[in-house]
Each structure stands twice: as structure tokens, then as C-alpha cells.
Amino acid sequence: MGYGMPPGVVLLFVAMAAIFVAVVVWAIQAEKKRREALINFAAQNGWRFTQRDDRYARMWQGEPFRLFGGQAKEIFEGIWAPTGHHFIAFGYSYTETHTDAQGHRTSTTYHFEVRALGLPRALPRLSISSEGFWTKAGKLFGGQDIEFESDDFSRAFRVTADDARFAYGVIHPQFMEWMLGPGQTIVPWRIDNAYLVTFESGQLDINRFPHRLSLMADLARQIPEPVWTTYGR
Image (cartoon, rainbow, N blue to C red; front, side, top):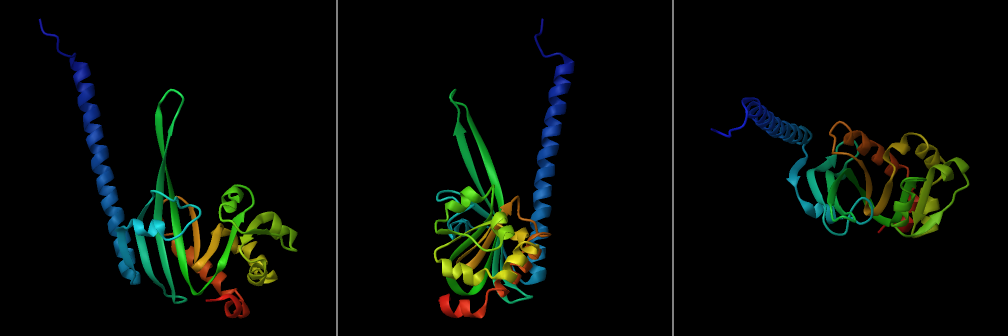
């Protein structure tokens, strides 16, 4: 007498295998379609596209980057035509693994869209983060926590800088007004040598990062000329 599986169970396994194969095929096709769209988008704008290069994950320190590990994928690099700034935009991810008291391991991968806009000159370090969620992260940047006369601005943002005088030179009244308006979109950001660096959670989105680059260029334009003369190097 045979001990084979009942026909219903066999059909269930066959159906599950078919669904698994269909999902894998769909994922492969979706990834291929996405890659082609990214390559075409870069070509249309005269930018260079690189599928992966982890050196970009080590170009800057501080959030969201980790000292060890981390991947940089879907990298766009070129000239932002409206202003002539050099820029880099890419997807950054890292994975954290935790072990509970029973020895069970779980892994979580975090994804970010990172954008860096080249500045005419290197400047001292300055960072702005939202008061609240990113405040603790801002403390990792070091520097002096600086307060401003605008209560609205001080309630909304945390500013740290290596040089308070430099921060006050950059963040003038009109700058604060802009930050409380359209500038909120690109928080957190920081000046890191010759780059203005911003990031946000999620995969790199070609429908999002060009607009963010425009705002970053607007921010750079608001830095007064005496600041560049005094602190630029």
C-alpha cells in the first residue's frame, strides 16, 4: 500500500511552487525595468549612472552613514544644469542584526536617499536637524548647539557648528524664514567641507531628488558672500 501524499496536498505544493516562481520572475522583471528607467534618466540629463560603488558610502561621516558596512547603489553624478553645481545622489542602505535572549537573530535593512551638492569652496562644519526625532542624531555630529533670536526657528531646528560665528553668518533672518518654509523639505542637512549633504528615508526616487537638488541650490545661494570670503578655503 503506498504512502504517497494525498492529491490535494500535491496540488497545494504545486500551486505554491508556481506562485513562488511567478513572484521571483516578477521581481526580476521589475528590477530590470527600474534599472533601465534609471539609466535612461541619467542619459537624458547627461549624468553618469553607476549601479553600485560602495566608496560613496564612505565619503562622509555622520548620519545616516555607518563606520562599517553600508552599500551605495543607483548612483547619479553630474552637473545640476540650472546652477552648474556638481552633485551626487544615490541610495544608501545598511543592515543591523540583533539577537534576543533566546538566541534568535533578526535583521533589519534601512534605506536612505542621499544627495550631495558641491559648493564653490569648503566651509566649516554646520548641521541643521529637526528638533525631535533627529536631535539625538545631531549630537553625533559634534560641535556647539546654537540658539537664535527667532523662537520659531529655534523650536523647529537644532543647529550645531564648529564655529558659532560662522553659523550666525550663514543663518541670517531671511535664511531662517526660508528654512521655516520650503527649506523644511531638505532637513536634515549639513555642510561637510565642500559639500552640502542631505538625506531622507526610503529608496532613491528620480521623481524626488531633482526637486531636492533645486532646494539645496537655493540654500547655497543664500549664504552671504562675506561668509565665503571669510571662511571659504
